[in-house]
Length: 321
Image (cartoon, rainbow, N blue to C red; front, top):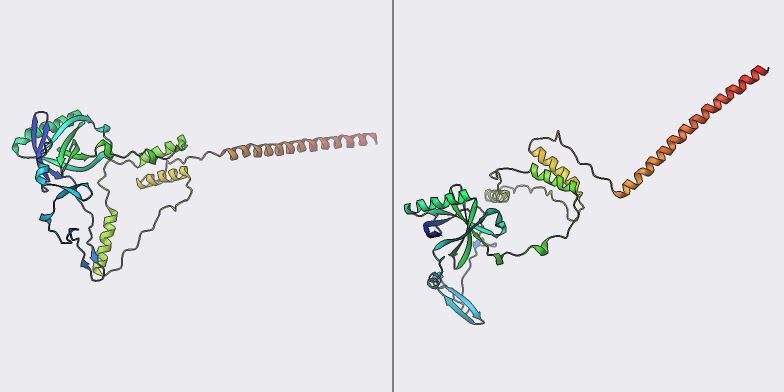
């Protein structure tokens, strides 16, 4: 069990559930030290007071809020802990909502809530079952790290999970970033849906951090004095290159089928509709070939008639003689 980050209680109406908060995620990133390249010595951050230019130890550092230039008000941790907030040591459930109504962009860090002691077992189980059977999530308020936060409670693998959330006014609107309306055909939408269907999976456990693996490979090679791994080929499309959207979708669907071992035996490739310019030229070619065929038929009939006339004339001459 990871070290608890916070201890308090879930307030569910008049029901109190003592809990301990532990992080639900781990950091597997590769972390670097800052070093002096000339001799590889560590470069450290020194905390210096700007007034007397003296290095300050951690126990001499506190919080302060600047209310005006050259005027700062000190605020102690004891004063923050003593603030008259009902959520100071409680995760207070304020409402229940449908899970689909929560915008994922508002969700931040995630934490597991562990029942704190045997007395918490029954009310913990009660809240867990209520969340499971209602198919809803609980919206709660709690104070942590000097500020009140909004949270979301849901059940994951038998445990209650707390997601910290952004307040509504902390989420920026993407309205100005959305592209102008572009004309998209129904065939393109259907092909995109087929691609999404081919790429649908049920388990994300197969994903891995390839960047971290490559970085660890570089570190291992340098530490052992070996050549660095060869860089991967850049398969990215060059900027500015015009893409045939439907052709790209077709190729993507074929690649998705192949990755699933379907090999495309029953794959159907969508035919691109001819442009208006091409469509106007087609009847002209057809008319020209029709005229040619008609001309050949007329020439054939004329030749046959001429032969019959010649035979009749020759027969009359023989009779006259």
